[in-house]
Image 1 (cartoon, rainbow, N blue to C red):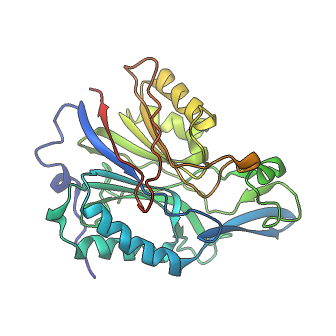
Image 2: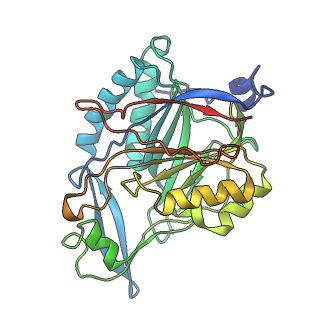
Length: 309
């Protein structure tokens, strides 16, 4: 179904100059639960070793319909689908589901969606970007402050070491055991959006710790970063938590991180959980919030968080 893309001024009319201090009810929908939903597939090219994620589209299509039905009944205002939650073909399915359902029956305003975006360049070395986009409650992709749609491509591919493959129980899937780099086209810009929460941007996993991206975010005077991750088990301050704390302290930019269930430390029976972490510049120590998946629910238990001015 065709939709008119909503321009920036229409999206932010009446609120773009409002104070940044606000509260929002955040939920996380970790659509990928196991390797039955998506699995890393190894391959080699010109002597280098890679992996790419292949989704089980049939399972996820049904899950998306149930998710939209569920979120429409919830008080969630901001829903996050973590890194690579959807293949390219299912983003328009999600958009149509949002457009075709009654927007008056829920509070949903924004969806941050991690997604495997097809590279339109037929000569590209790899077929897709690791991307994220931000939708409004009707399924429209929001427009960034500089004009283009709010679609953010990842800049820095992730290299999964043999040790990490063992921790994630991926030895069989990624055999033979060699370090493997994420197969992805590389992004070349940062998109910033001005609206309810100030100047916002999205970063994807590895970009959270890379100086080339963080330098741009600092120069753009961002207020809040949404970081979508594949890495699991955020109960402890691992690399993502430590990186967001560093970013907060070094630049004053607040970071909201949300992770997937697909990857996580499964050694010794460790449980992998969905989580959201918020690191706020005027709070010390920063809160680190965990959201456990509710039984029978596609959405992790939502939580209300206060964003500073």
